[in-house]
Image (cartoon, rainbow, N blue to C red):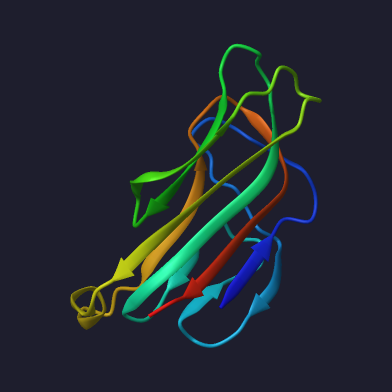
Length: 137
């Protein structure tokens, strides 16, 4: 089980990854994260629930703030959070939750699955971004 967050607000450019400076819970060996990094990993076969939450404010007023889960460098379809923010001080909540499967084939080649959350919208400030990963099977 993994629960990570960033303790202060951070500005993230378009296509930038959100960083997490604190591991609230990092138990077991199925998941891992190094504090200060934007990457978290799934180390064993199974099905994992990945949940992301944050408050976000856009640096522009004409585009919604969007984030998307990235798996081994590829955007994960459907793992998207979006919110409309009208100003850099207008923080709105956004979130997503998805299931990720790690097959035995991936790990037979000693390749852990790397995950990150990318800002796919305009430059934005993210307050208290949090990721929770639970191995469900």
